[in-house]
Image (cartoon, rainbow, N blue to C red):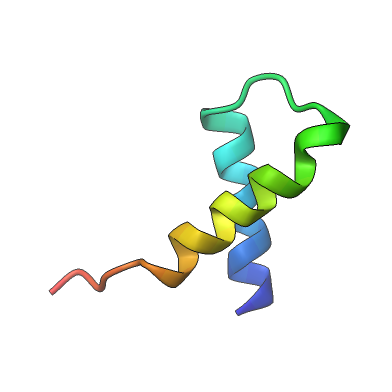
Amino acid sequence: MVESYFSRLRCMVAGQHHQVWRRYLYQYANHAAWLEDHRQGSG
């Protein structure tokens, strides 16, 4: 589960946020956590 979260966080940063600021890193992580919590299965 943790590996999945960090994998999604890395993909989100690479795909959406082309520049990451250290002072906002907690906001990126919170957003990734929210997306992980609200994911729906494919079926």
